[in-house]
Structures are given as structure tokens and as C-alpha cells.
Length: 82
Image (cartoon, rainbow, N blue to C red):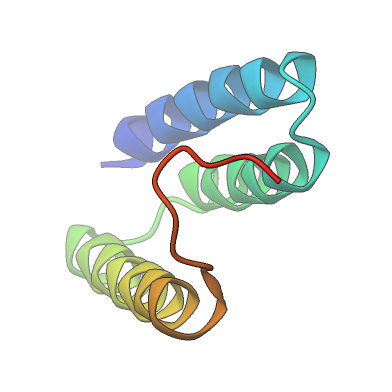
């Protein structure tokens, strides 16, 4: 299971680089933080159950954050530029 977290760290690092190159610095920083989190967890050698609990908590936190952002912070508009 630790290899899965190392793989997640690799892919979030790839996304961080692509976001940085695309000029999305804040999102790139978020993905760099996720990369560090996943790589750190990959080297802790926890039990599979603990890895599953951590991943479930990660998914819940991401879903709550996305729902909060899309409900309260996102300004409606479909491709309209100001």
C-alpha cells in the first residue's frame, strides 16, 4: 500500500509542475503540499487499514473543500471574461 502513496505523490508532482508552467501558482503550491504529504505517508510503512483510513479522510476533506468553494466562493459564469 505504501507504493500506492508514492505513486500518488509522483502524479501530484507532475500536476504541480504542469500547474506551475500554466501560471496557476496557488494550485501548484497546493499540489506540492499534497505531493509532500503522499511521499511522507509512503515512507511511514503503516498498516493497510491505516492507509485506507487516511485516504478516506483525505477524500472527505477534499470533497468538503470543493463543495465549500463551489457553493460559496465560485462566481457563476460560463467562459465569460471580465
